[in-house]
Image: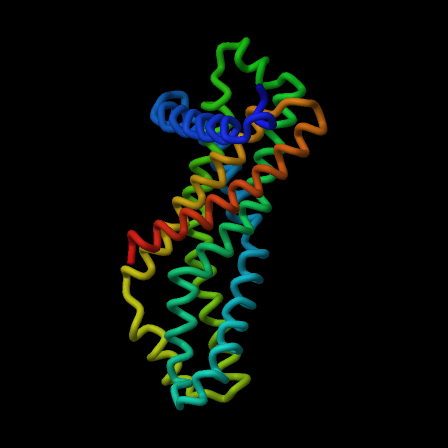
Amino acid sequence: MTSRGIPLEGYFTEMGRFFQILGRTFAWTFRRPFDGKELMRQMVRIGVDSLPVVLLTALFTGMVMALQTFSTLKRFNAEGFVGSLVALSMVRELAPVISSLLIAGRCGSAMGAELGTMRVTEQIDALEVLATDPVHFLVVPRVWATVVMLPLLIVVADAIGIVGGYLISVVYFGANPVTYTENTFRFMDLDDLSSGLIKAAVFGLIIAVVGCQKGYYTRGGAEGVGRATTRAVVLASIAILISDFFLTKILF
């Protein structure tokens, strides 16, 4: 019976395919030949090409955080702690989660569409006929490019979000710039930054594996590619939010 007939069976099938792709990715990572050019190409597509949208989102996220919290904290004469609140929120939670959701929509969907198109046009079958493992050739570069580039994007997003909070608090509301800057880093340590980067690496792994898995197992022609692309984004987004809860519980 199909997964539509037995939904639970479909869930187990999806989980099995996810861990199968994940296991094959780890197995092929340390085997030659290494396609460094493809890895670099994917890093540019995932990291550099995504930089504008991540920066813009982080800037306005920091600005909104400062805008919301400044007026509230001012009631208690605690507006000097806006910098701490913005910085900790961005580093621990907002930058990793929001940026990862953006990358899931932008890059996870692209991976699903690319591999799905290759599957329905029998390009993946041709690789198998040529004794080339499709996971080694197609999946491994995409997975590790995402795992490497997403934490780097998060570091930049953290900084831009803090700058956005500074612009609202100091320039717009007229807060003391020295107090804002001091409090921004007073309550933040390396553990906060490292926890955000760990989250980003895990989210990157989820985005790439889910996107590649949905594309790799695509069936049904052009319509199937569309379904795979949509499901890649939806499943990756849900997995990010669920894993964020457990990672937060473990790391903090």
